[in-house]
Every structure is written in C-alpha cells, then in structure tokens.
Length: 72
Image (cartoon, rainbow, N blue to C red; front, side, top):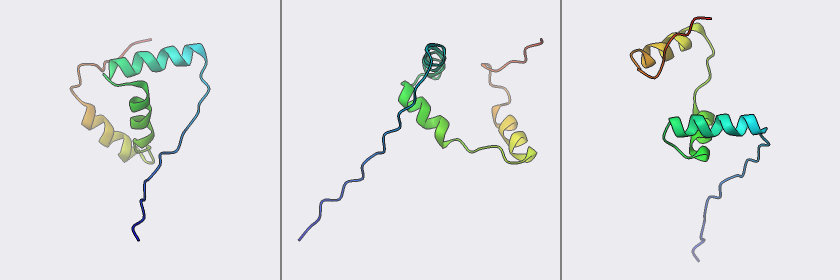
C-alpha cells in the first residue's frame, strides 16, 4: 500500500500597521519580489552573532550601488 505524503506549508499571520505594510511593499518591489517571497528571504537570513559575522556581510555587499552612507 502506497502512502501519499505531502509536506504542507505552515501559515504565518502577521498584523501590520499601514506604515509597515507600505514599507514592506516598497522594499519588496525594490528587491523585485512579491511580498511573501521577500518575507521568506528575510526569515532565512542568518542572524549576526559576532562582529566577524557583520564584517563578512559587509564584505559581501561592498560595491553594491544600491547602498550608500547617509550623513545625519
């Protein structure tokens, strides 16, 4: 007897304010993704644990023209 095994995806519900929804829409469009895809990417990102993790991330992003330093 064969079993039909399907993995189901969990559903995550998050309540966002209007400003948070607008920011999510803006950031996902800027990344060229749907909002759900963008959120999945954020969830999968590795967290920063040490300073070495931050340096490794900075080195990976060096030269990205979308990033800039803003003076306050």
